[in-house]
Length: 125
Image 1 (cartoon, rainbow, N blue to C red):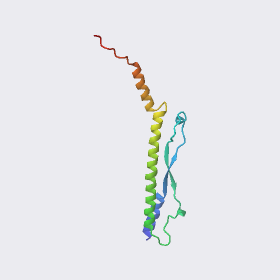
Image 2: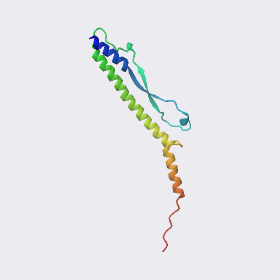
Image 3: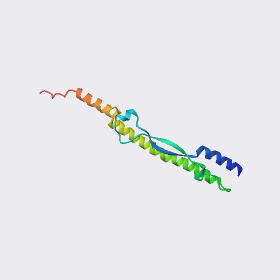
């Protein structure tokens, strides 16, 4: 019992947090280009002991340990997926709509190369 309590306390102190997605503030490069989306990142929020995490009155510490791991892993997986999807959409929007984006530069290079081509002359009979 004492070993499982020590193990539960150790693991809970290491994984007693949840991850939440947050929108980052716009930087100077994004200020020149108005996009609807924002870049995102993950923040960790610590779970406090008053949230009901703990072994009280000989409670089952294994269940508390499993719940803490599941909540931490689940929040990391779900929030990480949200951040990954949001950042992908933001990158695509930025590249497609901003003048210094890769897609706009490539499109402009293509159009410039087309304007340099001379029209083909019809063969003479």
